Image (cartoon, rainbow, N blue to C red):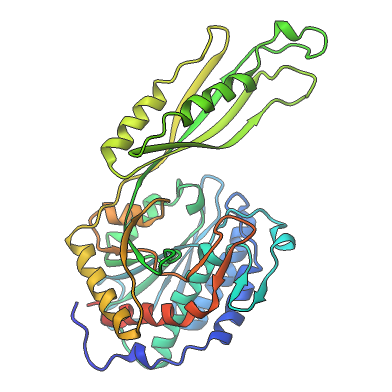
Length: 383
């Protein structure tokens, strides 16, 4: 992994204004995970930009109701079969269609706002721009470079995990342009994550005439959520993020559904948390509770390969004049899968900013060029 001289990434002509101009159409193309057509429009846009940058672009059909994916392979003397660099990114967001009206593209001093700009369209775009500038400079990367843009990361990648892992097996390194950490650091490990689907079933009745005859599924779910979140410890956390219940306000609810997320730094702690969730019981005999396990992200702990990859990135960042302290992070990414496979993986290489998943989502404009230069350094150094 030794860096060869000269270092072309130090002189590539990155331009902040040009990067913002290119990023804006991506941010204004809303692409919530559960809208496959909208994600498809985003893949069209990104695929075209990748093709214009010089990649051979393939569209991979979505499944399970999710959108398509894009695989972009850049030309290399070694061809497609040689192990290379996989740039792993997603283009789905948590923001529903219409968010752009509440969170329009807006440049304000040193920040720029918009749905998905931080998580993670900004990072994906800067990674592509890094590759484009490398090619424009006539530099041949030591290894072949492939971008895989996926469509369902925000819900745990249930339809793309097999695709991600298959592509990663052909790679020597995986680079993930998820957002930079608040201190500018990068991610060399992530916590284990499990999702659960819960359903409570009660007994319906007329809420005005025979209220006492009913058993509310909503009330039972509220009891369960309080008990579940009370199980949180420093080793394993539990949180309910989605609840849907009832249909008519004048009816005692028959069903209530919820989704729960559990996260732990160690796999053993997550496994224990999973066992507790699956052992939950209804609070009374006249209501029912069903708990099923959803998608899971395995724990990713830095091994020797990831640490060596980080050392290369840290050396590049030092020459560029900034620090990228390594850290393990909560919040899953597709890097969980590749890191757990033992493939050297470096995450958090994207743009700096804050407000992910909120109406305050924004990037720090001044981080675009330095982070793109770091990314270009990795592309032109790793061998």
